[in-house]
Image (cartoon, rainbow, N blue to C red; front, top):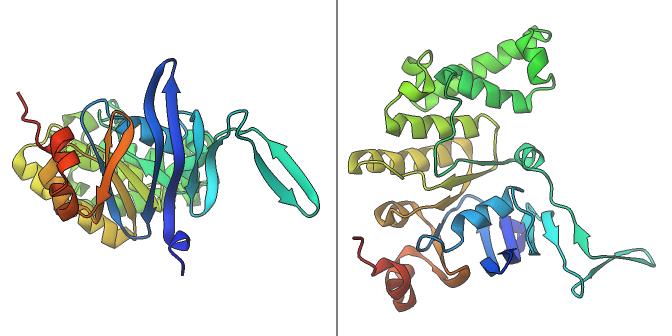
Amino acid sequence: MSKSDANVLRLEHITMQFGGVVAVNDFSMEVNQGEIVALIGPNGAGKTTAFNVITGVYEPTNGIVYFNGTPIVENHPRGKMKKLYEGDRALVYDKVISKTPDRITKLGIARTFQNIRLFKKMTVFENVLIARHLRSRANFLAATLHLNAAEERANREKTLELLKLVGLEENRDDLATSLPYGKQRRLEIARALATEPKLLLLDEPAAGMNPQETLELAGFIREIKDRFGLTIFVIEHHMDLVMEISDRIYVLDFGRMIASGTPVEIQNNQHVIDAYLGVQEG
C-alpha cells in the first residue's frame, strides 16, 4: 500500500477567504488510517474553519478535500481550472460544488463541536437514537410512527449497546443537559459514533473540563479509536491532551501551516514555541 492509499483524509491547498480576511491559507495535510492527528494553533488561527470546510459547512475559496481518495469538497477558481479526461474527450470545469454536511456524514465522517450541541429537551437515549436513524433505511418520521418496527427495534438495541460501551447506560433516561459537563462531552461523542463513522473529528473536546475529566477523556479517545477502528482528527488547546494522544500534529498560525510532526518534534519547534506553546495565558 502506498502512502497516498493509506490516506483517510487529505487536504490539498485549502484556502478559505471571507471578504478580505483569509482564514485558511493554502493549507495541505493528511490523516492516515488508524491515526490520531491533532490540529493546534492560537485562537483565530483557522482551525475550526478547516473543520467546517472538511464537513461541507463552508465551500472553500480554493482547494480539494479527499476522503478515502475521493474528492468530497472541491473548488477551482477561474484561472486555475482542472481537466478531467474521459477517453479522448477532455472535460474542463472551474468548480465542483461541495457535498452537503448530511451527505458527508453518510459517507463516514462525524464531528463534535467546540460548543456542545446536544438536543436539550431529549434524553440521553434519544440523543443517540436520533443519530442512529441516519443509517436507517426508513426516515425519521417513519421510525417515529413505528412504520418499520423491526428496524426501529434494532436501532434501539444498538443505541443501548453504544451507551453501555461509553459508560452512559445508567443515564439513558436523564435529560442530556442534566449530565455533568464531562458526561455531556462523552454523550456528544457517543452520538457521533452512532452514525458509524470511519473518521471522527473532535473540535476541542476538552474545553471546559477539569484535569481529572481531561485525563479520563484521553483514555476514552484511545479506547473508542481501538474499539471502533476509527481514525481521529482533533482540534485542541489543551496541550497535555494533545501530546498524550496524538501520533502527529499540524500547527496553524494566521491561517498558514507553520509546522507539522510528532509531538516531540512540535514541542521542540521554535516557530511553534514562538507562535503558540510559549504564550502564557493571562
